[in-house]
Length: 201
View 1 (cartoon, rainbow, N blue to C red):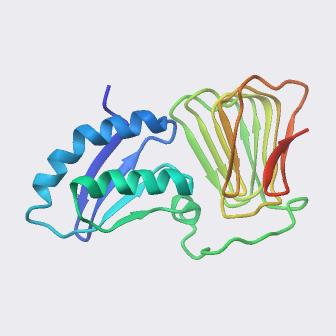
View 2 (view 1 turned 135 degrees about the vertical axis):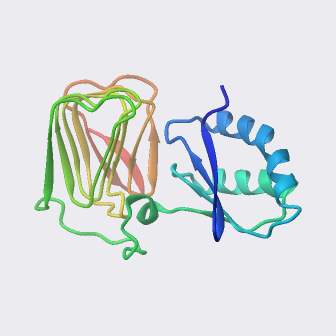
């Protein structure tokens, strides 16, 4: 089903809100269907286009921008982590002490479709289910199983970490880094950044 991209018109821009758990191939397939319709709109408009909702790597951004420009000559902007967190004052990567930070505690599990954001650290006293999302400026700690999306250091803090009782997801994120996971990781894994890579201990 082509429902990963929601298009809306604002006074000063066209917004493409992309489902955070959508795979890149699904996004491309849906864009190929929806771009011809957008092209009709752009015959009479010069509004810039903004991509929001999901973070992309530099390679993915280039691929999506090229795909859009094949159909429409428009300025395309991609939201960064500070935009997605709503921390508009934070525009540069910084490192702060994550051993001591403001923390939000969530009692119970995160359901599919539920999203929790906090500028400090987040502790979930339960599971994060598939389709659920945790976005923290500091650390992410899951007492149960991480099956959804976890993004620590979302404001650019590369000292942040992700830990859980077990991790059973396709990818995790720290700062602007993404790590793909091919199999479930048990025994209280801790993910940190070392040498510009996410490592799991």
